[in-house]
Structure formats: structure tokens, C-alpha cells
Amino acid sequence: MKTQIERVREAMAANGVDALLVSSSTNLFWMTGFTGSFAYIVLTATEARFITDSRYTVQAAEQVTSMPIVGFSSPKTGMQVLDETLKELGAKKVAFESPYLTFSQYQTFKDKLADFQWEPAGELLENLRMIKTPDEVARIKAACALTDKCFDHIKRLVQVGVTEFEIQLELEFFFRRNGATCAFDPIIVSGENSARPHGKATEKPLAEGDLLTFDFGAKLKGYCADMTRTVVVGKACDKTKAIYDSVLKAQMACLEMMKPGVVAEVVDAKARAIFDENGWAKNFGHGLGHGLGILVHDTGRLGPGSKTVLEPGQIWTVEPGIYFEGFGGCRIEDDVLVTETGIEIFNTTTKEMLELGV
Image (cartoon, rainbow, N blue to C red):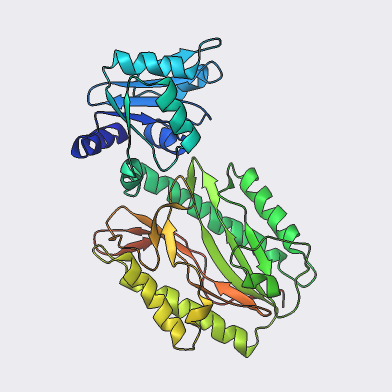
């Protein structure tokens, strides 16, 4: 299989890019495995250089094996080394990561590296990152497996009187104890709080009949998981059961239709049509899902207006949810790989409605 560098060079040639400057930590890691906070990659059709300062030269020597490393230390600056490297490689036009570069950084490049013509690369690298390599798939699957184990561990805490914070802390400890971190700030919300799709854990104690949403994921070896399960504290009332059944029906229907060639907005529309059966489409205010990878909200969107076509190798979250202010909300989310014939669902945690702490 082609390396990341080979894939980037092919995309550069197809887009008329002579030289590419990479500086975002996400793409630095994706291209080389480097986990430091500062570096540049300069890539041309035939040459590559990895530039970093004295804080990371030892680390770069261990992690970066695909290109020569150029280290520097004070009083020399990164701009000086970048200028020298671009001239050494014969660069004239240089494409930069426009999704990441701030206007101030762009102005600095133009002012201090005035001998070169600067042009936006657009989402050249982001589009490549959407199609995962077998190694990336394996890492995300491992993160999902650990997330499943975490849910099995923390669900035992669900009982009346336990606070949202207490559950979140145990969740974070579990990941740390197992060599991972949280892919994002966990969302642990109950009762009325669960009507906030991106609510934060509070000192609120769980109460009988609460809907309780867990939205969390492990970050393991640089790659993220993102799973949501909603459970009931104690016994579910009829309204809770109806809400849960509608969300599960929507999610299963969307998963069923996902395969290569399907347009993202069509999958999202399926969930809204199912919610509309009960007049609840208005209670589904976010998109159906997003790309998943090094970033938890990675390139790609399953939502209204998204013309992205599903392709083998893409990994998506599928997370319909409906929310009722003053009552609560429900969301169910899985991470799925698009295959040649359909999808592979990475999460194994049950989606049966759980009544816990009874």
C-alpha cells in the first residue's frame, strides 16, 4: 500500500502544487507519526525535509523515519531555517494549510518569506485523511474496543444519588489506567441536563427515571473513538420508552442504508424522516455524524447539505438524537467503517434500552 507521503505527492501533482508546507500537529502526525507541538514539513515532488527546534530533535529522530530532519536552536529562528530549506529545494510557489493557518501566520510567511509565492492548499490533506489505511482502521478499532470496556466498567456506578461528576472522573481514570486519554471532554448528562447535546457533567445527583447520556471515547495511539449510549436511571416511563425507540429506529435505519455511493445528506434525511413520524424532527438539531480519525471531529460531515459521497475506507460516527427541554434527551452513536459492500460497526456495546440501578 502507498505511504502517506506517496499519497500526498500524487495529490500535489493532481492539483498543480509544486511545494507544500505542513505545520499543523494533526497533519504532521498523520504524515510522520511525530507527536511534538512544533515542526514544519516541506515536501516537493522529489524531496522532503522535516524541520524542528532543539526541544524536539531527539524525539524527531525517534519518530520521523521517512525524511531527513533539519534541527535548529536559538538564536536561529524557524523562519530562517524555512527560508533556507525552501531555497535549497528550489521552491517558488508554496502551498500552505489554509484550513489551519491563521491570518496572522499567513502574513508572517508573506512578510518574512517574501521570495516565495504563497497559495492555499485547501483541503488537500484533509481529503486524503478521510480514507483510512489498514493501520489507522486497526487503531480506531482498538480505541472503540477500549471505549466499550469503559462503558461496561462505569455503568455499574449508575444509581440514584451518584453525581454526573463522579461518573466522569471514573471514566477518565479508566482510560488513564489503560494507556489512553479521553478523545474529548466526556458528556455525562442526566435528567433535564440530557436535553443539552453537548452538556457538561455537573454535581447533579442521578434521580429515579432520569435519561442519562454517556458521550465519550478513548484516544489510543493517536486515534479517537466516539460512542454515545443513553440509559435510564431506574424504570423508564412511557414517554422515555417512546423517545428511545424512535432514536434507535432512526439509527438502525441510517446504518442499514450506508454503503459506497450513497450521499451523506441522504443518510441524514432518513433520520429526520423517522423522527417526523412523531413530529420530533424539530428536536433533532445537529447533524447525523462526522468523520473520525486523529481528530474526534475529523474531515467529513453526515448532515443536511453535505454532498460527500460515501467511499470504502471512510470512518463515520452515526449519532441521531432528540432533545426535549425540561425533560431530557436521547442519543445513540456508533463508529462505522465504510466497506466495499456496506459498513462495519466497531462498537459492540448493546443498544437495548438499559434500566440501571433498579
